[in-house]
Structures are given as C-alpha cells and as structure tokens.
Length: 273
Image 1: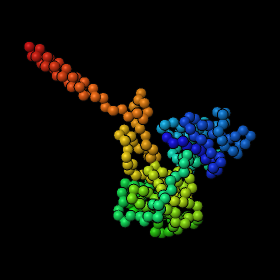
Image 2: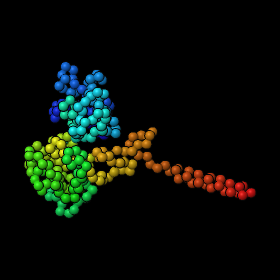
Image 3: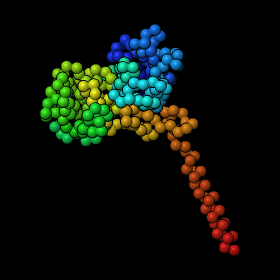
Image 4: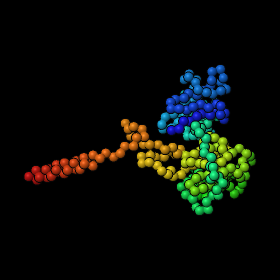
C-alpha cells in the first residue's frame, strides 16, 4: 500500500510517516498538550499498526477519549485514508503521500446528458446520511438549498456547496463557491478527480466513500471497501507473484483418473467372483 502520513491538528509541518510497523503516539515529554511519536510504551495513548492489509488503530489499556470519525473507540479500529482520529481532544488525520488528483480539462466539460452507470455511488459512512447511498448516474448537488440532492441543513453551509457528476468514466467533484471546500482523503480540496475508495467529507461531519466498478483488475485480485487493489495470497506464496498454470498439471490428472478407473475395474472383477 502507499506510504501514509498522520497529520496532527491540520498542520502540514506536524506530519508523522506511517511506514510498515507499529507507531506509538502519546504526549511528548514535558509537553502534555502536544502529541507525537513516543518510545515509552507506558506513555502511548494509541498505536498505529501498519501492514500490507492496512492501518489498524489500537487503544492503550485505560485510555479514554479516543474517537474515529466522531465515534468512540475502546480497543481497536481499522482505518482508511481520510479518517479523523481524536486523541485527548487533538485531531489527527490519515492522509496519503500525495494529494488527490485535480480534474484537469475534465472540470470544464459538461456532465453527460445520458444516464450514467448506476453502480457508481456515494455511500454514507458518517453523519446524517450514514448507511445511505446516492447513485451518480445523474449529477448530485450538495448544499443547504431545498433542491439539493445531498442536503446539509446547517446555517453556515452554502446553499450550493458542490456538485458531483460523471464525465465519461471520470467522477468529478466541482466546487460551486463554498467557503471551506471539501475534504478528499483528509486533504482540503475544491475540485477533485475522485477514484473508487476515496473518502469525501462535507462540513466536517458528513462522510461518504466513492464506490464504483474497478476496471482493468487482474485475476486473483479483489477490491476492499477502501478501494485498494489487493492481491490475494495463499499461505506460503510469494506476495503479488502471478504463477502460470503448470503444463504438467493436466497429464498428472489424466494419469490419476486412469489409475482410479483400473482399481475400480479390478475391484468389480474380483469382487464379483
């Protein structure tokens, strides 16, 4: 998986690299109001465990006040890029090593009038739309106005905050003049080219994940709900190694079938005598 970072208190200068391994986070020595990497296991409030499966958050025994996307976590939680983790009231966001893509020329192309792929959806994973899905076969308006498809009734939220639509196979987030923009995978964005698995947050609380068919997958791969392409590995196999079928496999199967047939014939012959 890509190299991830942990951004503390929305400060680009306060980023911790989340490479493979275990990263203990707690109050820095002499500064209880600041969080960072700590060597003292007793001082750790949480640990971020990173392996090829993803990022896991574990909460130290006795620690309280740990939340992921507004929900309290007592023991363990699996994280995705864009998740917000609160420890001792300090916000940390899991971000990627690179910012989300900009739409480029696709931003200036009109949305297609034809009905798009109904399998392209925005699935709510937090806020008032948790558990609901919005298909993107037609443009979807996000805002406070009564005609918004995804309506967020907050006095400080723009009437027309943003629009999501399809341009060909591209999923485009278009800003319509909002004051604060939108979080895409933990990064503040105005316009963005969205990919399956991207996490989009409106007004800090309303979280969605983009879901769409992934084209061009290789056999033996599956897609998690965070959109990461993962090669299925059998115990003992080399990670990511595609093995061609052995040319000797079919002859061995035929030989085994002939032996079994012969044994059955002998059994019937001598058994009947």
